[in-house]
Image 1: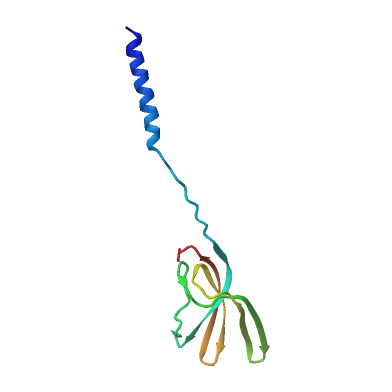
Image 2 (image 1 turned 180 degrees about the vertical axis):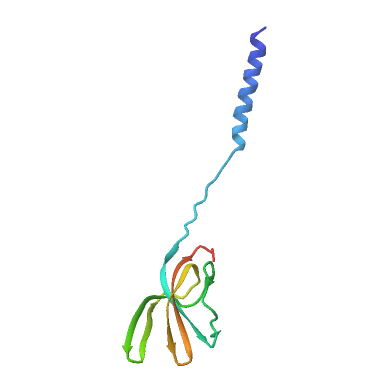
Length: 131
């Protein structure tokens, strides 16, 4: 008689364990998200304390559609009247939306009544519907 209750408990446990495994099913999905990161340059124009139509430069964490450039060339002219700095940006990145992860001002240049501010930015661009 001792073997029958033990047999019932063992048979019941076996059936429960084998039946419960039928109810667990898991799937995994892989998403391929491409991100482009790097550094680039941009500029913003200011006249008498007011930013032009593009507005002020972006801040860290902003998403911008401003043109970003791969290259910034700086030249300086020294004369008895003082020193002047000129900047030129070139090699524009593809048009898109960029997340600014860091930004700092490289320099400024006068263009008539305008002051043009040049910035170096660190950015990310995602192509997985992220932004």
